[in-house]
Length: 279
Ligand SMILES: [Mn+2]
Image (tube, rainbow, N blue to C red; front, top):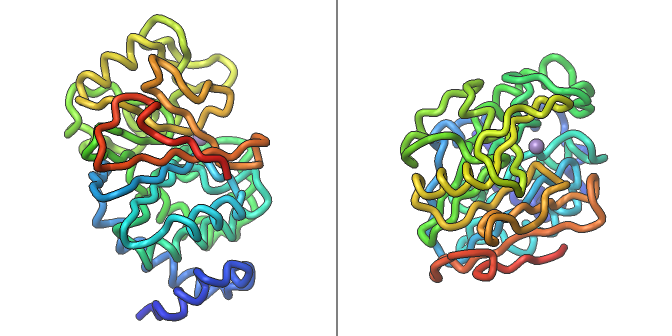
């Protein structure tokens, strides 16, 4: 039985996360797995306020700032994936997020990015994954493979890591299998501010590319107004008539860390209805 008082103390003392014994980390991973098993691919949220957080990539300080300011029983905090690799503090970052998830299972949603799915589709470099013992590689990869793929809100927002999946109905997202083409579109896809729909895989990176026509078509099928995503640091923050918002929340990539905040009690039609906040 996990000691939630102890986890609560850890949440309030982030410096101590670095010194967590292996047996405690194992217990946290296995407990978090039980919670994630209950979430489908698509998590539907309602409430007062939604806070979207882009790739943190080992930027533990960014995660700490967001959680200390926004994680409470009233808000929904949605992290868009890519918690590990690149930045200095991947291990602390993911362990801290898992502790927060156990304590606030309804208020914190951790989506899957491509860096969480190393077990499904390998990539290089993967410095966090390479640093792990075989035992912890398996524990973390089994857990993070189960993360949900997308969030929808009652005020017209869909949020996910990369690009929209090529579906004709929002309920199809719940049937997406890990490793399928639809899964790859969500976790690896990039958007380009150009006409055209499916633009093929990038010959250098292998990442699937999509244009404006694809964005408009899928958003119409989903019945959503705004996409909030991360994954692609080179993308403009606002694309496609300000309906596609790309945020990054890591100093591992950029000198700016952005989050997006939405008032869930107000209809969101485009980026003007969200606040972009800098950490
Ligand atoms: Mn990514």
